[in-house]
Amino acid sequence: MRDLLFKNLTSDDHRRKIIASSEIVEKQGVRSIIRRHFICMVKEIKDERNIQKPLPHLYILKEHNTREQKEKFFCKIKGSLCAVHKGKLLLVIFMHSLKIDLVTLPQQVN
Image 1 (cartoon, helix red, strand yellow):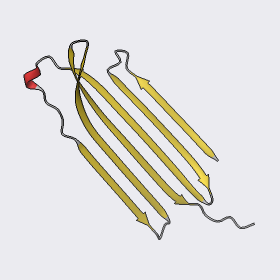
Image 2 (cartoon, one colour):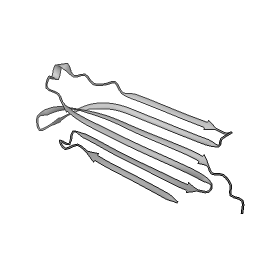
Image 3 (tube, rainbow, N blue to C red):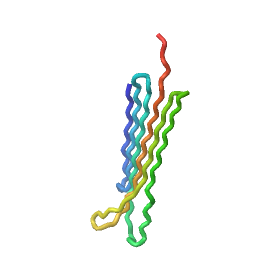
Image 4 (cartoon, rainbow, N blue to C red):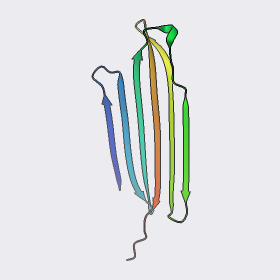
């Protein structure tokens, strides 16, 4: 069995975009849930001398629980970059996250 959910949201002025997907798969007695998010925001910079870029950030978490037969993985990446479009200086801020949950399904007795 596989369930998929996909969202693509864009603001009216195209300055913010959110893409999210979720996938649930049950295969060989294991349920895997995979969630992905990508967020991107664009801001115009008026004063080039006063650019305040956020620092890049990386966060990773991995958990393994043998008693409950569960595994979790989470990764989040944040960053920013400057770009020029039609003579305007833009600050692009982005965040990407990935979350994976693996759970052993209970055995069914027939």
